[in-house]
Amino acid sequence: MATKVCVFDAYGTLFDVSAAARLVASRNGGESFKKVWESVATNWRLKQLQYTWLRSLAGAHADFWQVTADSLDWSLEAVGLHRDQKLRQQLLALYRELEAYGEVKPMLNALHEMEMDTAILSNGSPTMLAAAVDAAKISDVITDIISVEDVGVFKPHPSVYELVLKRFDCSPSEVLFVSSNGWDASAASGFGFETVWVNRAQEPHEYLPWKVKHQRSDLQDIPEIVRPPS
Image (cartoon, rainbow, N blue to C red):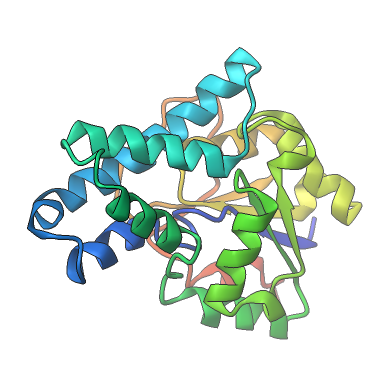
């Protein structure tokens, strides 16, 4: 069945989750932070994901901004910088305006020219996602922004993927879902979406019951994947 809508995860897929820490380290984060920023960025992302899964399992939902702040606090304490409130504020402020990867805008422009509906499906809260989309200047080529806040549970709960079907009145087979998270792409495959894993770090495949259909190192080939055969 032909693709009706192309759906993207946000953080790590469209937006570079390491950008906030990298920018602070390159500007005025202090010598101590420059030495540990990569560790902070890695732990920040890891804890962010772990907290979404733990909150979902425990039935203790909080929006993604709270999860993001909690994860940063853990990561700063791990390197002994948790008392630096100025640093914390800088990192959180920049996280609202993460850089998009270089191929994002050209890829979305190509899909727009194909008259393909596009959407973001993310753990992010609506205000976080709106700020990121505006900062990346892609609001004109994104049809809709869908947040897990509509169901109050994080990915990979099936009710999150169900939101796409309700929004676009389509079947799972009409959705191309794109994520840089192998577990997310795998779970979406299990839901019935055609999937692309954007494996930027060249990680091993996930040992889960569901396998992704496509694997790429970035997003530039997405228009070719969704283009109908001539």
